[in-house]
Image 1 (spheres, rainbow, N blue to C red):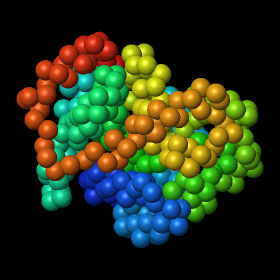
Image 2: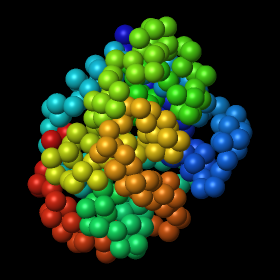
Image 3: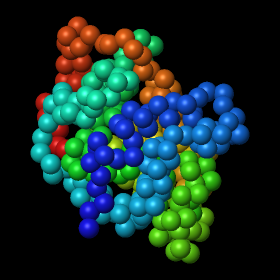
Image 4: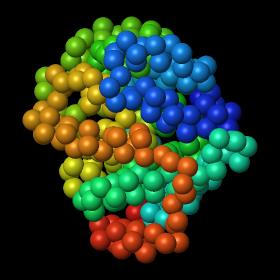
Length: 286
């Protein structure tokens, strides 16, 4: 039986609600006590979203979704076509934003450009959320966004709303609740199955075209327990530890670049046309 929830009928009014929660929870300088208070005071939609996410993101679920999507068999699209497709996620009834998904992507990448970040990083900023097209494939919100975490080993208390893992069937599997679980010590994050979502999907789309630093940004930008709290370090290898600085360099742009001023797509398009052509083929497998 499918557990998919329509985008408009899920616990979140729209996916921006999750982004707003993240921006508050991971505000710079916040103490651990303040994190917990923020979680406790989160609106019911966010809490229900994480309840579903933590209950249903089992190892079997993740492995099944990786098999379903990571072969990239859903056709070819250019970056612009994927972004336009993602635009159909905009909820016209939402009174709090009139920004399109493309404009949100441009805010992130333009903030990087204003800070003279490398061109590959500006591109990464633009594409990092394109994996949210999974919602348009019929996937539930809890299987597209949310803080990511390893499956097949013990859950960390640093994952948001850790109490909801009690309902996950894997919580009753002794192997999956041991420190290393199904993994070897310091095996490297590339050997670890993270909860399924847009991070892993866009990584698969882009993995043959962007530098390692960019791919870490894509694959792990929602893995807050690791890059914000230092959890799961026992599964990381030397490359992960080196790349952590790049993930942390990326995340402030992801969390805090939103503004009310709309980017001028017509003025910016030629710059991004050249940027996409520099790194990517005309169309990508999705």
